[in-house]
Length: 324
Image (cartoon, rainbow, N blue to C red):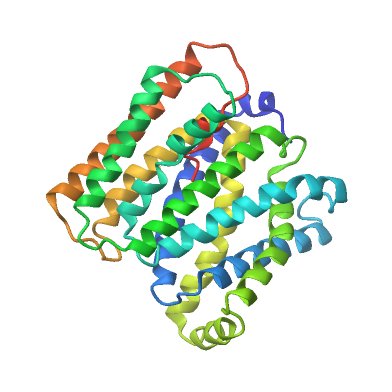
C-alpha cells in the first residue's frame, strides 16, 4: 500500500482524493436510487457491478494499465469474511433504497457509529469520549424523530436499511481485527473484493429467484437509451466510489474519509428532498433530519478534536463508520 509520507508531499493529491470521494459517494446514492426505480432486482445489479469491476482490473493488468498483483490464495482466504460482510452491507443498502427516500436512508445509515460503539463495548475496547457518545446518541435520536414524521414509512425498506447497518458494523469490526488491507493497494483491494464476491452473489441471485428473469429484464430494458445511460453510470460510479474511498484513506487518513462522508451526507440529505421525489415534507420529519445531521457534524468535530489531542495511532471502527 502507498505510504502516508508520500501522500504528505502532495497536497493537491490529498485534496483531489477527498473531493473525488465526496462527489462519487454522493452521486452513487442518487444513481442507485434512479436505477432501482426502473429495475428492482438489486442483487443482480450488485453482481453486474462487481463483475464489471473484476473484469476492468483483470484486463487492466493484462494490458499493463495497472500494476495490481494476481490472486494469492492465502490473502484471498483472509479477505473472504470481509468481502462477504461488505457485500451483505451493500446488498441490503440497495434493497432499502427501493422503499426508503434518500434523506431517511442517509439518516438510518448514520446509526452505524452507534452500532460500532455497542460492538466495541462488548469486545472490550476503550470507552470513547463523552462528546463522541453524546453526538452518536443525538444522531440516533434524530432518526427516531424523523421516522415518526415520515409519511412514506416503508417497513421493508427500514428493515433492509437497519440490516445494512448491522452488516456494515460487522465489516468494520472485521477489517480492524484482521488488518486485511495491510500491504495491498487500492486497486488490489477492489480486485479481491470483486473476485471473492462473485460466487456468493451468483448463489444469492439464484437462491432468491432473481435469476434468470432479472437478466432477461436487464437486457430488455437496455434497449432504452435512458436506462442504458443510468446503468453504465451505475457501473462506472460503483468502481469510482470504491477506488476513491480507499484512495482518500491512503493519502489522507480514515478521519478525513469520515468527515468527507458526513459532509457528503449533509449535501445528499438536502438534495434528496428535491431530486427523484418520494419525500413528503413534514415538520417532524425535517426536524428529525436536522437533529440527525447535527449529530453527524458534531461527531466529526469530536473525532477531530480527539485525534488532534492524541498521538498518532490506529483509527477505530467508529472513525470509519461514516465512510459510506
